[in-house]
Image (tube, rainbow, N blue to C red; front, top):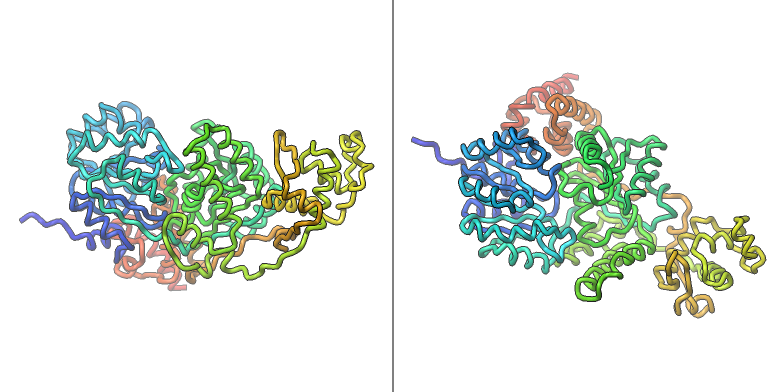
Length: 600
């Protein structure tokens, strides 16, 4: 008698090493096994991939997964194969012979997962090939790319609307970490999903500690102070331009940090090597533009730091989602200034007036308000995406920082605005600060501005403090920044200059010492000495097999191992993240190490 398919819970334990489903996973698994269309909106780290991997193991055919980046597909295929699953990708990374072998495997029914880019799937030749295959269902990862109202719209994703026409009876499962109501409706409509099950997880990720800080100068001192408290941790630092990524990476390297710049201007081979080194824990810190990280399948990223304000809250949430995918604690910090908004608006305002331009401006305003607001940041994010949660209490800077001391800086603001007025509204902030601090800059002396009454009256303040004051005046809309960064007074600025409106600022913004972000609260104890030894063993095994370390076991699993110190297979299989396949491949090596520590 043929053996019946094992039940989902049995496969969850034996193949994935988990004793219970996370929220919404079981509903998604049952929907796909039942042949129903699915839209799942679940934060990064919520376990979306298991929702389509587990049904595939029960169904017997091939699941076609559409993913936006080649590097991401490669990592996902590597992880699946390391877990004992039969997966391949068809892309430009293979030569003709390799592609032919994969096609042969596909037609023979030897593949459980086939990964494709949207560009490849949208070709007639590939669709003709898939018609000869028993397909379980299509998976569209990063489904928000379909919507022109989303933050990463891609025309090739939009063209996936043809899937229903070419494969009318094959279920479609769309997955994304973020989607406003508008984007959600757009995904359902353009994919022509048939009575889909829509599952929407809670956006709150308590393992992320969120901080937003006003940037002091170029932010370098704040970045260095933050990193000094996080030695040996992997993280991503986001910057707005290619030039700034290289400058920051070089600055960090000079100060002894393992850091590399990553941006679209680098040669493909260089980018691929930097990506590989980061995924394999050979490089700890990547300083990148948003070209890096989309859907990155690296679970042990412990921090994400933005050096400037992202364009939208969708971008922000997607980017911070790359931290703490293993469920362990991680920190996300955004350094920002009012000048960031001005820089972003320069890209938007030249667009043709209309709904799309207004839409982009409103998203930028929402991002700016989020950074400056003093309420719970997790609650504010949830509210933006249509969710409702209570204040986090202990997982963001606003909920843990009770110091709200304000300082009146009306007098200093009048100094700055007076310097602007007396210099003739023809200069930028740096020039005006030089005047206030009595600089001997040649251009200033040639203009005769050393004879002004405001010359040198600001020496009591550090230049960084004047920069902070400038940012505060921008926030209050007391200044207008024109072409070539030339400043002029607004009606609000005139009111301040005449003493008819006061200016206050949070005292901590004027502190010269760059303080690191508040450290995230620990999510459980572990034996640091044993954890480091387990991590070393994991790295050695990964190097020998040519896979990223997290593919073997996540940091969270290693921490649990450091406490449990299992002595046999049964005990080890009780540890989260360890299933039968992974025990067969790696169990004895880790058991030997655990036994040695128990003996000691």
